[in-house]
Length: 326
Ligand SMILES: CC(C)(COP(=O)(O)OP(=O)(O)OC[C@H]1O[C@@H](n2cnc3c(N)ncnc32)[C@H](O)[C@@H]1OP(=O)(O)O)[C@@H](O)C(=O)NCCC(=O)NCCS
Image (cartoon, rainbow, N blue to C red; front, side):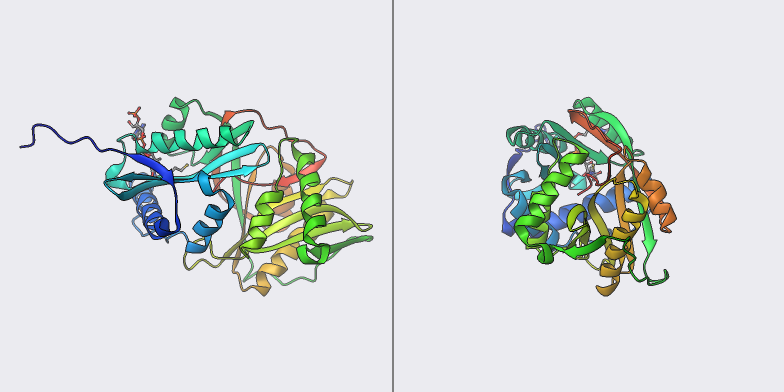
């Protein structure tokens, strides 16, 4: 019998390239365990792709953090910064090392990082039915904000469409517009949604890592909206695509404009042989639900956004699709 159990020494440090395989294994174990315990579903969740981890690490090198004990990676967290809006996700700990303070340590590391990066709005998204997560975040000062939706459409069964563009409008790609004009348009459009928000860095790194395409909606030659479309494999073996971000100015015909941009995103995904389109969005901008319903999307899941700091304002002058799920 051991009279004194040795206390595990946990250290946090920035993730490095050599950690990628371990981090993917930690994620797979933590999520497979969660599905089995919380939802009684026994299956191996696919690993996050190495492409996804390398992209996140390049984007926020010091905001991707591992927890190490005895030289082994036992947990990790990824931070994301969109202007002055900062969030983290996923955060994950090996099942055998859970409930020993590793998660709290990683969360505190992520919060310090986002504070130091000057974020005035900080939060995360989690599953509302996971009582452990909700209790954990609530005890650390997060409060529930709003539900976010995941809506999905099968691209395989749905009819191909010619992309309709309302009169005077056109759709261009990132390269058509040129990087400088594209990023400056994205900064201005994101600020329409919330002054603290700037998606340009996210788009710049997404394009650098070839995650898909960024499409622009122009009226009379001026960018009025954009959609960041992911067609890369975020997890091993995935056939999904997603509209990761979309912002569109409301110029009085927002439903028609949004349908046009969304159908252009779907066509791009079909050309890249993706079977489904996933769209996660914050329900503060509730018009998105009806726009997606009228484009044959169905609701597949919900998350809850929890805020640590700041407030989210959602204006009616813009349609904004975004989620804080990593
Ligand atoms: C969420 C996760 C990262 C937490 O990591 P962890 O190392 O277990 O976290 P900690 O040990 O620091 O804290 C866990 C807290 O939850 C409490 N807890 C455990 N089970 C609980 C339950 N069923 N209900 C309520 N609280 C619970 C623990 O008692 C502990 O609180 P305490 O320190 O005040 O006693 C980990 O459970 C995980 O990897 N889950 C799977 C992936 C996931 O859901 N990630 C989060 C996505 S947003």
